[in-house]
Length: 109
Image (cartoon, rainbow, N blue to C red; front, top):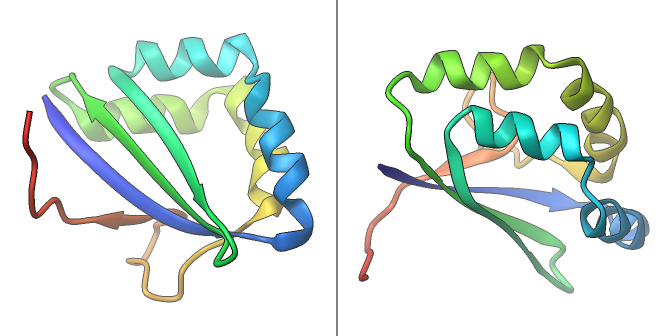
């Protein structure tokens, strides 16, 4: 199991829309996340900075293949057409990233 954390900004005028979308995430999106070995997925919002922090546990053995399956999923692609316009990627993200991945520096169970 691998824990992962990531950040992105949220457009202030899109906060209500983003919260509403995530109050009723489409079943197909949730099914694809689970099928790609992601568990305990949580997104937090920090206002007034409007920073989203996402964290999940990856329980699979081929992260790249599982992420490719999510990206290729038509339902997820339609979901991203709604959520992506709400977000502003961090300037410091790595090439090819939308959400900026973070380094885990501490964990305690």
